[in-house]
Image (cartoon, rainbow, N blue to C red):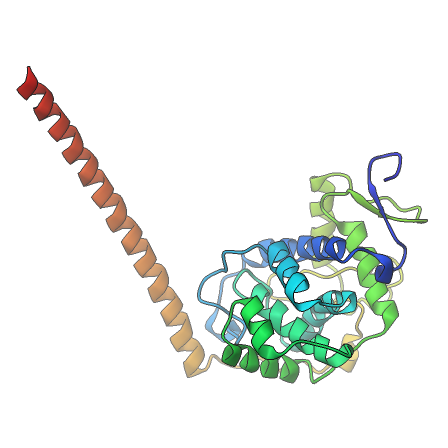
Length: 290
């Protein structure tokens, strides 16, 4: 720790503890999710990565679980952020939300481990650790590779930029990089202002902005924004009207939400009746004893 009590991290991401990387990545993804969850879900924006309900495990615990049981490399963790930018550039309607994040992470790590690592796990193990059927992971992996056009790698300098930016924008402000003169954000308010400033950046940060403070961009109001990639080299997919499957899926989601609300109302009504019955019974009992 330095004099201000912050944790000093190595200058290179290869030397950083993998659990610290998981904490930094989860912090960034959680802020992305909190921002994007406010965007209404449209039928045409549904993807293979959407689940019916948000998983009951946090992003950090999910990353730690994958790291523990799949022995993930540090570069594969950081590549998850690069893939988010790649897919957002190619699919303007895609958002990383509480419904898509976990399935995106397991598909990303499955594909990147095979593309970068000499040894990797089987899909059955990735699926078991990720909490989904292996057949579903196979579909997610194929869809993931199709969207990013099989471009699984990037340079070491790009990953280092992500690492430096994760430390700089961490919402807790308790990390700093050894040998740097810049200071981490020390309050939640300043961190949020930094996050909001990312949303207003140009969709092509390689042109003039990347030299200063590259950071994972947040998509605001369905405007695609990326970082550390030249969007001029990427041809985004043209917006398509919702398919029959997407319309059916959105109707199913609405039906589930309605049923949950209905069941909750029924449960509250039953509890109310039981309370009234219990009070009446207790009153009758007390009168009888008197």
